Length: 356
Image: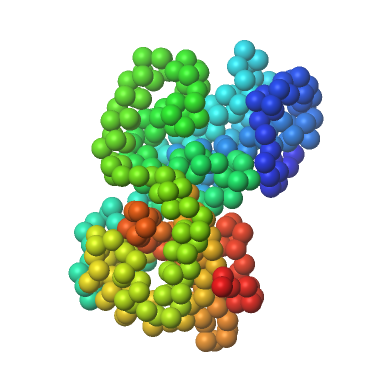
């Protein structure tokens, strides 16, 4: 069995494309021990299941672990599959319960800007903290369809994932299965081995909590759509140009008055023009940078490479995920531990391919 092989791009859910007969045939072959049939059966579901596990856990590494465990459980539990439900619902049941097992024993994921007070202008950076479970960025290219459908991007936006993390794990699961995945109350009750009344109660509480935690403003999907491709690209070029020239004033002019700048896993973050300008002039803008375009969590993002004098090369340093409010940047979240390879970004020799 090769359940951890890369997902085929644009793989479609067989049941949703009228291929139910093929699905049934693959299922019966898999139940007789045919691992290749099993791989083919689940191939079209793995991308959406991984995104679901990420929403549950706030970590691409935990999501990968949950998905691999769920695939293993599905393989071992094929004999217990009940054909009165769909393969997709059965796989979501396994993946959700696997993620619940992990979430129950882990603290919720955080971002510095929501974890404590902002640092004053001139404050020194605290050392990176491995003790705090920080939220991790999610590559847009991992979403189910090759063009990263708008509704899928919105479901992994930082504000939504952080709001999810504020929920108890069971409420998180119910909200996602109902609001994002679209299962019925009866299906969710079956998946989580609970009652419809319990599902409805958890859903009501989860909706109220998420409304309280999410900012009352446009989503990144709506903002980027309103800006359009040309203005979005121009904004990215302005940001990259200012960073590479070390132009503090130009960067500050792109930020909202209440903008934040954070760098997980560093707990320190800054809010407002004065504090951010001081930070920029004392830390990142004392170094040389090059950048490449990136997309993470449905946001505009840039991959940042810092010059290493010893290696005489620009090396991966962080991915800046930009939260926009209108045509201004309201938050820069610089993920220092981002895995460049998972984002399809070069890690060697990248200095020959800069965004111009």
